[in-house]
Length: 392
Image (cartoon, rainbow, N blue to C red; front, side, top):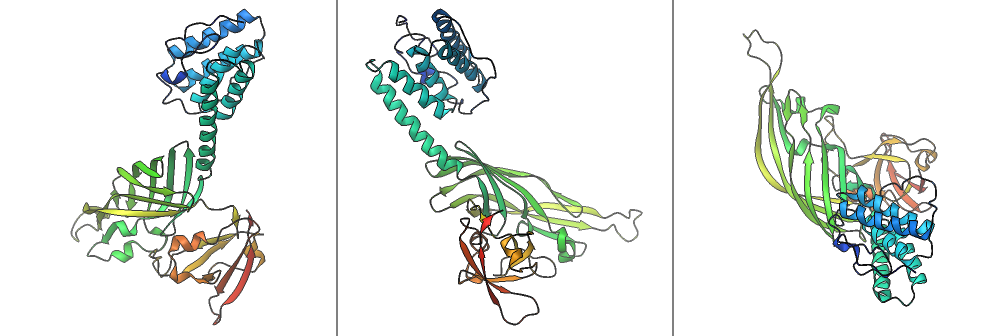
């Protein structure tokens, strides 16, 4: 057996029973991402070679400035275990560094191998406690990753959520911007400037940090072009609450409402091109966005829409229509078509729900049944349609 050596300043023991855990590593707090394992041949050598890799790994920790540097240290410890699989110090150091780089499964396995080789070591209970902590982190990670996917805002806008530990990125590329701008043209014929498919959309993103059900960090939207005017990008702080058990996310932040005025040149002017006469902030107000998700995998193949009226109004009036139907989907096989209106979902009238809740109720577990009350344009009476959700 190797002699017990003093722990390195970086926190990693380089032989025998470790004296200090890796929590003292200056980059441990930021090294939470798993980097690709280095591709190489299996290490070979003597016990002294294994010890040399442990020392090299300790040096890598002392020099580490980022997560990639810690993965270099992990590979040194991993080579030590390949050369001398019965060396406890190699497994302990490997488990400690892997726990800091977010490779929780491998960290637990390494710690368990250490305990099997050193069942009566002085730190046995501490290592067992560390395993319990890692297993708890694994459970939390599974719950957090389950939040990834499609979410629906209360107004019916779809968002995509990407979860990376406690960092969440929630974004939508086509959120209606109508309610955040008073768009006018010329002498005030605003509706003509915002009609049909030309209604403004915003690319909005929330960069969130989630801890114990509380949400903080920032939000932003990019520039938005409306006729001849450009609404500037905006950003600011955001806070809120998340309850994954209920599939609910609430965000609160300050958002500006703008005035946008495009105009034609004066009658006797040599200029002929329309120009932007004014872009200004009317008010800054506190807003609350509520989201429902993540969207289950069981779908019926309907693309829902809340848009209505000649000018494509997005304001919710209790009308949920079908914008498109996916080929060979449950909805297509049942004969549903674009422009059909959904009056009720599982017996609950759509007009009694918010747009986000109504859209959320269309999806569910694969194999589950949803009953829709459908009214087709030109028909007087609605019909009931039963669909079996499937993975699409």
